[in-house]
Image (cartoon, rainbow, N blue to C red; front, side, top):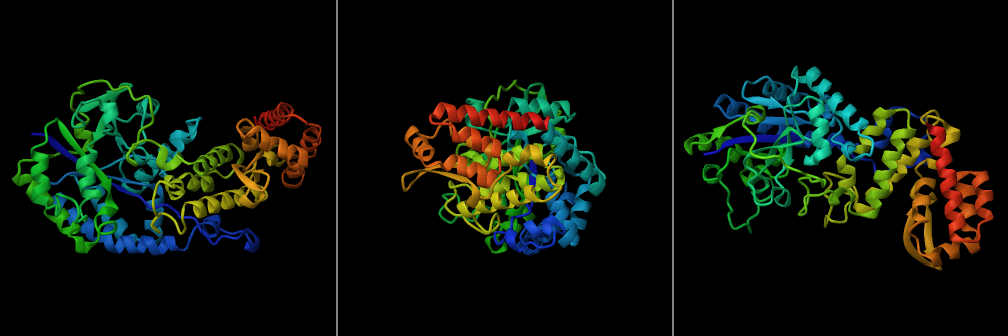
Length: 479
């Protein structure tokens, strides 16, 4: 019979204000107040009432009964709880010091920083989170879980270097290649706890689904499944908001949580903390070359970076990391939630993540990021970076074939150089003959030198060479 380890993610992002209008910003105050929606307070207070308070009161009773579990708190969730949910935060503090609970480490901003080419920002955010856990809960986390279980060999190496005893990863079938997720593995010498996504999702996604062939799911039934599952340890991990927010009280999810400990004990299941699981001898070494995650059917990065608009936004925030002096405000824009809100893979983006659909979320993101970069004194060296700034959608260069949009847009000179490599020849010729490129560079980017160079270009290769040379020069000035 396996040990069972439960983990819960407590996260709230600072959602962007889709009504943001740069022309209406007269006086700059707290940028978080300007850029982020007032609905963050409303949503947090609702989640506190529906989930954080009632579920955690139940959880404290469960811990007293011998139930063991781990919590991962994003820094942005803690910030919101300090502002608008002090009662819930006090309950979480009681959980944190309980002998049957464990606090995990993650990225402070629940960010996609681990996907940046330069991993320094990722490491800094992990350190920031460690300090926050020490300040808030008086604990030093020993086990790590990356944002939405994003994982590969490289991340395992970094986490090992940071001194953690183990890290979580998704039990992706193509990685396990027939092996069970219910054993402990190593990757790059780091202990890896694989999430059993099928059993985890039975609670997180199937619980309230009346069309599910196992509906209704009772604590008794779930405990029986766990008892019958082979392996050294079954790792169950899900969003904490499952209990009362994503799944309503009326669905019975809170009662499920209440009765789970006694049913686990009745069926002979032994609960364990992640740090206890990490002491189990590893079965095998895993080689995880591709990036995996717990998101979507493919369990890869497509839910955040599968669409061209998402990749544009991601490159913009990665570039801004080198340009913006105020790293603190910039880090809020790295949260995975912003990119999830842009995903066309979701049939509808609930207001829990964004106030608008995928396209509106993208437009808002680029508009606000552009405004941030335009604030006087925000950039490292204004003269060197003007051509690299993120542009709002109305100032981006949109490629056309006659009167038809060609499907390509550039939101900076950096991206313009990349697009010139892939845009069809007839589209390039169309804009060259009209003088559109040099006009945009002069009027929007204000780069008179490049305007003159591009104005001389008659062929695609000349244009590509001139733009890439200028981009290289601007990046060189940043060093």
